[in-house]
Image (cartoon, rainbow, N blue to C red; front, side, top):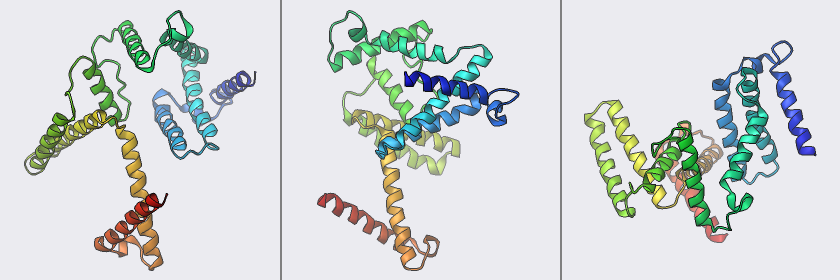
Length: 268
């Protein structure tokens, strides 16, 4: 099969790149810690291609992400920990274990039933790893907002959660007031802690509103980039740069970009 052939070829390529005698010096010098940031970066580039619906780019981005798996597996094989086959077997076994309604004797489930069963299976898996705490196993390397939501979801499963959005909004106002007071009276470290408390409540608000805070912020970043680009282009036409402008002029151009976007939405 072509898939098996190409995976084998990729594994062999990585083995050659890591060869201490004839391989690439950069690849040979890497370890798990040095490669981990690239793994995270490649995952984000996959997400970016999907967001942009750049389907012609997606195979390449997925390939870059697959390379990261092969890279880690090769380093593990060299250290005698595991190899790529163990990685593939691990995820295959997990998928079969978590889908007994597909691969076993359990009857069909609706989406809600499957979600409950999935969480029960994950809890059982955590128990085998001696992760007895409710919050054990939530990865430290996750983006902070995503990890906050996951921590809150775990706590909510055992009843540690507000019943509706009202108390969340009250808590957000409380944290905002505390931050406003802290900036004039506390140390920078304490102000940072208060800011973190506010962000944590914002993540909780997103969870109650069924919003992915990372996705929401990415869209806002894109919007800011798009509108600021309008400012730069308008100033360039006037023979100026942003540094040669002022806040009043740039605010006016920002409002123009905002109005044009609303008009385009209404027309679309």
